[in-house]
Length: 184
Image (tube, rainbow, N blue to C red; front, side):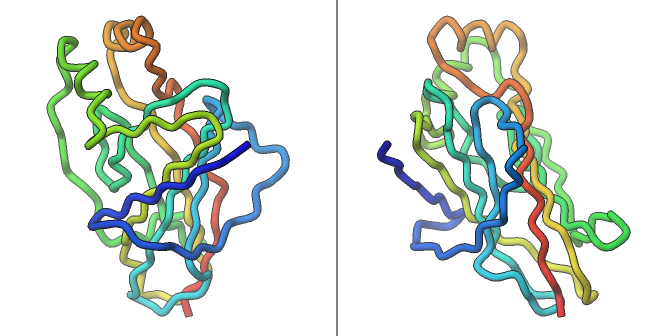
């Protein structure tokens, strides 16, 4: 099966080299989606920045629509939750997010999801990737990157509208395998 890879960078497109975490053989794939993290290396300096590549593969038999927003802010369209966990399982990120966008109206749902500027249709066997920059903590040690692809918070009515049009979106959140990094 031919596979395509698209990477969306917050500020543009460019080639990527990445280190893929080992995927345990018993990971259950939610929604027939394989979600993973990649970085270009595993060791970083304190207070440096890290490019994290999110990659979503459709391993199902029908297309799925994913919102292109892979930033740290929650939204009704779905997002990615990322934690940089220290040795005590505390999130070591220096900043969070406070964004509260307005929910979509039922009569806007189809035009929103079909808008290629905001949503991507991932066909079976295809990948979609986003590259996001994060600030690392200043304290040396081993950290774990824990991410989860969060489903959209559409109403039951909106889900019904999409379903009648044959548009599939995530119905459940999808965790990525944890990726370990070192800060030295």
